[in-house]
Length: 291
Image (cartoon, rainbow, N blue to C red; front, side, top):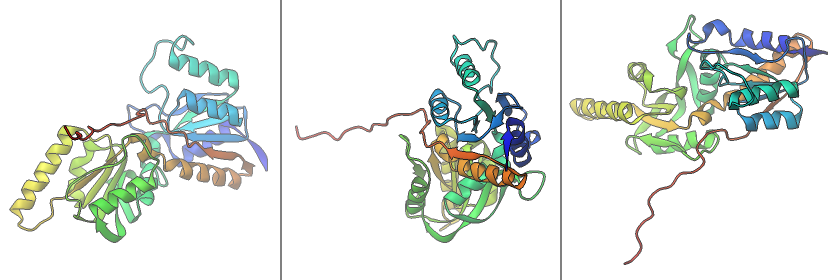
């Protein structure tokens, strides 16, 4: 086996996650690094933050692949007096390249949506919103091997993803039946129309805002009342943005190793287990004691 270069790894990643499939507003691809530099170790993480770079340097990674872009919005300086500039300077000084696969990884076969669907136990999945072919597209819709209750399903979701301060919230009858499910990694309340059209019992996504979630549930309750004994679906299962996308990292690491091996090169991969979700705590009101 020969040694891979940054360019070799980028070529393989972009075959799996074509940049042309990213949303127009996105910023994917190689952020920092020399395409000719050798790569023996690749670290996968959700976020390009300082703690992840610390891990990369300590482990001796030559390349970090993140889901979220470092430079998604335009900046006017990469001076080390800014937090993003400082990170870029440290990447370069440390000889660590940085690559981002974002919305192009969301929709791909074996991407973020497939990984989340598998993590929560869905089978026979299809895209929620189809892409250019039947296999790719935004989100996934599938069925559970055995139907369960909303409460039990939400617990399954919580057990399948990294723990966060937010945890997992759900909206709907805790004893309601869940058999058909839609999932979208990352922020998913813009897809409520597609979720309703898919006829699912529950929708798993992240970053659900008050007004869209409230209106969806109010509409479900109203229409269930018109239908007599119909269930007020879709129920909602809301988890942290970071947690919803983390399962993809293992898929990406596995596929990178296999794709490079098929081309006669080899790398060692590692999935970061750092919790880079920004929230660090959550409190609820304490019950009042005896007066």
